[in-house]
Image (tube, rainbow over all chains, first blue to last red; front, side, top):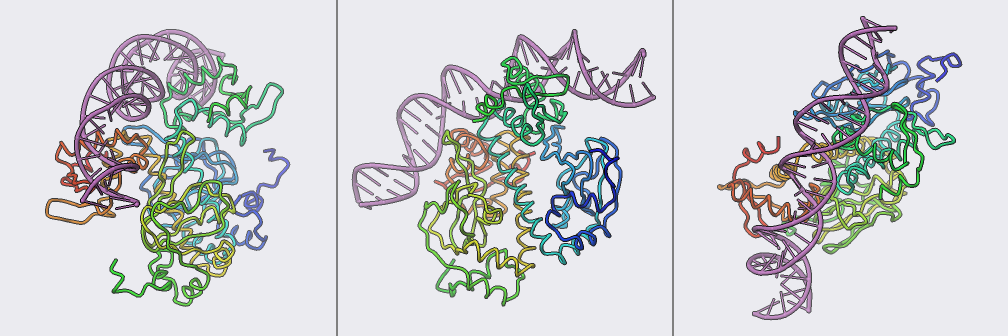
Length: 233
Length: 233
DNA sequence: TGGAAACTGTAAGCGGCCTTACAGTTTTGC
DNA sequence: GCAAAACTGTAAGGCCGCTTACAGTTTCCA
């Protein structure tokens, strides 16, 4: 994002939150009043499982990882959010302690809304409520397909699936193939597909040797998108 | 349920739908107008993946399984619903084809609401909308913990977890222990925890030999609830 | 810019669970 | 009530992916 070209005030950012797609300007302005903007450094936890759910967050810039950690230290990543995403609203809605952790992956800009204000706002803006319901429903479906992945497919297929998805959402077409505009470590990929870091390294090596992908440091380019998709099913 | 004691009309049933907990009588009556009651025999599919999402359902009596099947024939069960549950609303909300299948496990009584009417009703009753959002949120959390189960725990722990949960929701206290008021086949349990039928049979046998549970035909009694819970973590 | 810390590559060993196989039991439907 | 169908018990063999181990590489940040 080229900030020199934009006016990065709260209202500008709110316009780019998916929850507010198609929402009236007045409704947006009202939301602006109850939000507070906050800069957060890379690798900072925003909340941990068990914390009281006191706020809802809008992500303006950077990435945020929603995850949980087992007593053994093994971690599962539920989602990696990007600018425009809302998070933390589930626990707030149910008035339950945090069931996951949220942590910045990059330097981030985040809007914070106190629970009370969020509840009140929703009650007064049914159209936003409706959007929120659809949004949560979409996330439910997404995680259902994660369960299917874990049960139906083994690791190479799960990894191929992850790469294909990243290609769709974060891919940049180049002459050699689709360059992924994300830099995930093998550990982070492992947490996303439910396997060990070593296994990711090994299978990625195989994909490379098979000419499916190219790896330049932490930059991945998909050379044969269709062959990769074949692997999924 | 002893039907001789009840007046099983639509309104009576709607009162026992969780979505309508705490909803005003007038709102309920309005819902009654747009529903149609239907008897469905055991083991009948209500919809399959890919079907158009034309209706939302309320389950009045019997159980309904929400699941999906891989090309290999392997099946994953997302949920087994009971009287009082709503289903099929996710795909309807998003106007997308069915992403799962729904099938009766017992003879069932089901209320059907056409998509249009449901949408309209929601738009006019924000309090029901709010309940629905919370309900979907709850389901999202439930399935998140399924993902954790699959990633963090191996089969014996997953099975112990399933039995513990069934004990809480379907358990009847008896002198020997907690009798599970559900009759699931080993295949159905396998689909719920993501493993093969044979593995369920083997581990259940071990639990029996270890004195944790008792099996009488298809009736399971948990003899040592705490020992079973220990196994989960 | 240089040293520390984090990440990647690779391989051997092993264990959990799947597959295959089949006999015995329970339930279902006529 | 009986035959057929569905379900359960059990075991051998194999393989996927985890763990362990460590050297080499890249990235971070002071």
